[in-house]
Amino acid sequence: MPAPRRAPSAYSTPVPPSRQQLSQRSRLDSASSAANPDLPSISVSSNSSHASSLLSISPIVRAITVPPSPFLASSTPVPPTTKNAYPFGFGSDMDATSTPVYNSAERDTTASAQAELSQADRLRLWRHDALMQHQNQTAVFVGDTVLALTDDPNDAFWLAQVHYNTGHYARARQLLMRQDLNRSSSCRYLAALCLTRLSKWDEALATVGESNPFRNASEEAEVVSDGGIKLEASMCYLRGIIYSNQNNFEKAKECYMEALTVDVKCFEAFDELITNSLMSPAEEWKFLESLKFEDIPDGDLVKLLYSTKLNKYYNTARFFEAEHQLQTVYQLSESSDLLQSRAELFFVQCRFNKCMDLCEKVLKNDRFKFSIIPLYLACLHELEQKNKLFLLAHEMTENHPEEPVTWLTVGVYYLSIHKIAEARRFFSKASMMNPHFGAAWIGFAHTFAVEGEHEQAVSAYSTAARLFQGTHLPSMFLGMQHLQLHNFTLAEEYLDASYNICQTDPLLLNEMGVVLYHKNQLEEALEFFFKALKVAEDLDSDTKAWVPIKINLGHAFRQLRRWPEALQNFEEVLRISKHEPEVYSALGLVNLHLNRTDKAVMNFQEALSLAPNDPVAWDLLKRALEENSQAMLNF
Image (cartoon, rainbow, N blue to C red; front, side):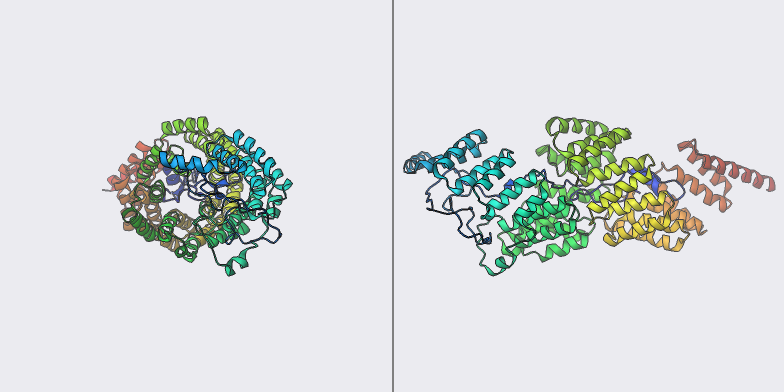
């Protein structure tokens, strides 16, 4: 059933199978059809850049004072929240904002000030200016020179930063080890970053520590904040990345939550929690309420922005409230993140055209905004926009072949043109590039489901369920697979597990009703079908999304021999969509039971006009004609 689906934002969030396939799958009297790829939001992996968490120095120095021996004499770590922003004191008087623009008088003053600087200070300015202008070889050359000249630990740290930014992670770590700089928290953080980029997860964890050593100290110390991200929070976030790559997702979740508790400005930790669905929808909102946004400037704005990124099945009223305030009070109606959140809501409501329009509006300004591309792919697949998928796949492969979402795009294109083997190959490539990319795993599983390879599909869905424990989708897909295999007990167990995470997905409620229908628990099945309809109405879903639920309601009423209710539901479906051959057959069967043989004949003929090779419709038409002839003879 093409019920609303949560889009990728987190884990990104897988997306639903195509409308036609879901409609076929939801029919109670027909075999389930396989699902198409769920394309969640893009997750941050070991390939993500973490360098942005470190503070930088402005290339313009108004007054520099170099401490005689800034190296920490004690090996006891000092809580980052109370330390100087720079690892060894250098640069404490620097302007930590963007490079200022001076008029001619100010330029003369600056030139005069630079003339009074020492040789080492002038070299430092040169090094940093080269780094800001991405002249990396110049920055390395000058950085080596100034380090040889001063042997200052601060210069070693910033040279290591240059090596890290140029992708020379082993070289940066070697420099930090050679200088014995691991007594500084900033240097340990940078060394651990280098190790993560080298995929040396155990060494990285040993460097950054298995737990936050500043937890108690930061509670007692007076917090001094300059408005930047606290290094303690960044270290907690990095610790979470390491645990995630060690498949210890519970510890990773704890670290991300601690990072946000230390500093709510650590957005990357928040993004990991949401896009990777490490928390259930209810947990997400509860945790958001526990964060201390009042401790930071513009805390209200940050809380509203975070609110729009949470699960769209839960607390939709809160989403609308946050969106309204961001649009009216903060004038952020054109914010790409806010537009993406609204697009995710449209996708949940099965309003795929509106969702696609918003995605294209965002991509018009930022053609390669990776976080929205999985959602855009889902809409293009639902609406069968094969040409747009083809063009996007070519653009992505030409410009970003190193990104997993590129090969996800190629996989979705091949899936849309029914080249399943090729689609599977590219989904597999995306998952190998980023083993924690939920969209790739779900798409990979769907390729097996399409071909009826249920055991392989179950294995792939199980991997997704293990990776993304806070989302109900993998468990729901597992239940669907077992339903197709007629393992109703296992199907019910998986669907119940999914229901414990999310009670507001119409597709899930519909599938639970289908299981009960097959177990001949018709009254209980009716309850779930009615509940699915109610939830779809509350979500303000597209009317066409209700079609499979109405069909299943009609079948349940038909089995209970409640003919008027069955007729009413089937007729409502035909008012919404007139291209449903199974519905015409079901309507004819009801009319046949009511001895309306002439209407039944017309219904079966309508069904055969849409599906000429349907053997069931042919048999029913033959039976209706015989009964109609007998009735005419008796008359």
